[in-house]
Image (cartoon, rainbow, N blue to C red; front, top):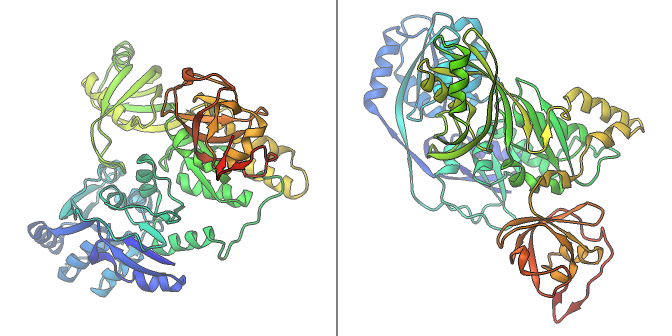
Length: 533
């Protein structure tokens, strides 16, 4: 397989060798270029060599390559690399780094633990602020000293991805700034959960999500293609379905989804990424149901949040301030988010203060998809005049799916073990039909005789319609069988009021077919190369 990898030219390193180990070839495409800030590099090197830092955290190979050869540390300094490529770069300069067990800067503070108390950590990195990392170090009692030693500048050039079998995006920035066109059949890959979140937010669901490393991502890509597959399709698992998981704190959403996929023996996707330290409702999809991701991603969400205010305020004042935030609000995504930080409007449907204990405020919020609760806490703190930050968060509802029906990983595992032993009862209750994923979106119920034509890609005519809800031309509409099965999602070609069930004329074009052709008997004929539904 020929893979186009989005990298800074300076960071391509041994990509070709790693790809070769997996039987692939690759080439580099660069949506960004790195412009060094020589003055910032000089200041960091001067401070490091003066013994200012107790530890240094290298978040990528580029600053390691630029800074490490100039370091002559006067005292023992703890050196940490975000991944093996960064570690190798440091080792080439005679340093002896330790490597994070994961590939995410968010895991730095948990990895360092109590060591951070009272320590100063130097961080040479790109001029892309990461306040989440800074705050995590501060919360652990350390001092983060960030030096922005290079800028990431969009190249502005269209990427040469058309000849590649797969395009692998190695960062959220490389995806959001890339100018590229996806050709039919091309596999799109995210190197990790942050990149995948940026892609999903933009409406591009990656075919493969890696673990943050190139080798781990290539392994996941090979599993998708059937190479070295280690899972077997579990008895009782249908062609497509949904599993509502109660994600625990700790693992990423992608890790949790992958575990569910391994237990069921299927390839999976998920809707609505939760940060590792956030728990709650995570909808995992498999089979054709993964095409529901854009629908599930835009559904309303409900959260319960513990917010810590930075000053004293009484409950009445807090509740009055919270009421002012119900309705349309302006937000700019946090700096640590994986999406472009453009101003956006979101609606807060309900915000209820549940409890106040000292400076900890527990509240429930119902909001539009894409609302940042971290930003909401910050703005609530500004309105109170005390300042505030999000301390803990749990998602209690995603669309129609609530925490009451969400299942722990242990419960899913127990059902899978029982199914493997011949008892599929529990598994049948766990796996939900794809039709539940369409929620309250517009829908058309069709005749059995129209279904197979739709599954072959034919447009739906009014003669195949039994009933419909209200919708407008251009809306995304769910097509449902008389047995309440999801046939497809399609684009309405006319307003619902423009025709009656049984009328002639085309009314819908299928966009994402969920049901396999042949599920229903063929009820259509070809005439002059046309298919009729």
